[in-house]
Length: 248
Image (cartoon, rainbow, N blue to C red; front, side):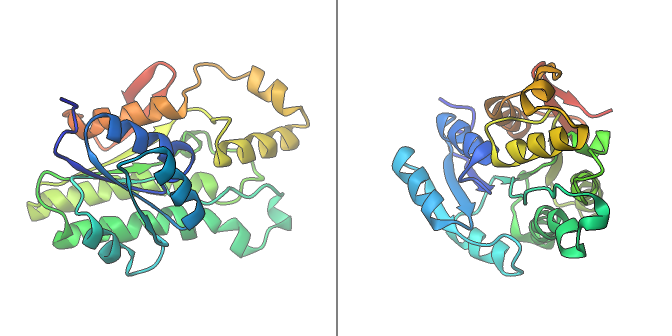
């Protein structure tokens, strides 16, 4: 029997990259899984390649998104993995719309679903995991707009939501998980590698060669399963090639 047998898992941003790996891991652990994403084509591809997964095309930044998602499947484990690509231009060349892309996507989606959970939409014992980034600690390069700040805000949001859940006696767990290193082979990772390399004036392969202890999307997925099934202390965690750890 898998560790998530009999559990409902909803992955917002589950059609590609890290989100897709989380969907695959949850299915492998026996969960009923709903993958939510904006792109219907990517969801169709996911459905064809992973029989048994449920899919829903929905924009997680819309106010009504939590209602539409929870009507399809009420989660025991809710993972918010949706995110915009970080900008890749000097600050002075960015518009506010470009600079704030990750606030308008990553943070807004996290806020809306955490808000719904705190309003009583999830039953006691449910767990909410926000996928953040190691850039929340490093600050990222100056050409990445508001990305680092947005990913840090997701950590704050998990912590604030946990305190509020405790105050209200809701019996919910809120956690943020930050992959410690950039990940090639994902949309966000490849965009970040190109942007950082350009800013540093080096080749992407040379930047990657300097990286150590890198995690894969599968490592992140295993960490999510561990947070969903274990008894972790705290609200913020990191995952690297060395495994899952509480954030300092």
